[in-house]
Length: 156
Image (tube, rainbow, N blue to C red; front, side):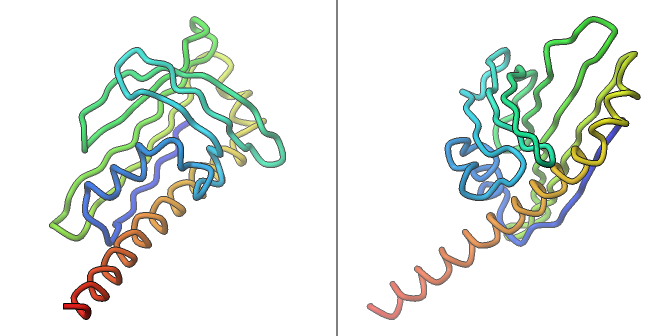
């Protein structure tokens, strides 16, 4: 099972990266991962509280790659050939004020079709909600920054 979303965000890449990696603020904007902690180093755990439909569950996965400002990915500790997942956030500057964000989630392994049948719709909705909320959060930060700058300029 693969779930992928790509969005153009009216915000600089560093703002989008800041939103993705400010784990302590997830509860303020993220309807899917409502709590998260991670030190963003390869091999480190990423502890999350995830809302799958009406269910809320805690889970721990492990950071597998970090390219600061560009890429962050993590994986569940594989249960052998039974089940393993892969999650990636990719941030790419289109220009100084626009960013392309790509969200990928893959679930593989022998029992992945069963898990997909049971949780596929909730996962799809969750990742889409997170992606859309990331767009809103980053664009709101740009608007607030612009307003603050305009107010500051008016004071001069």
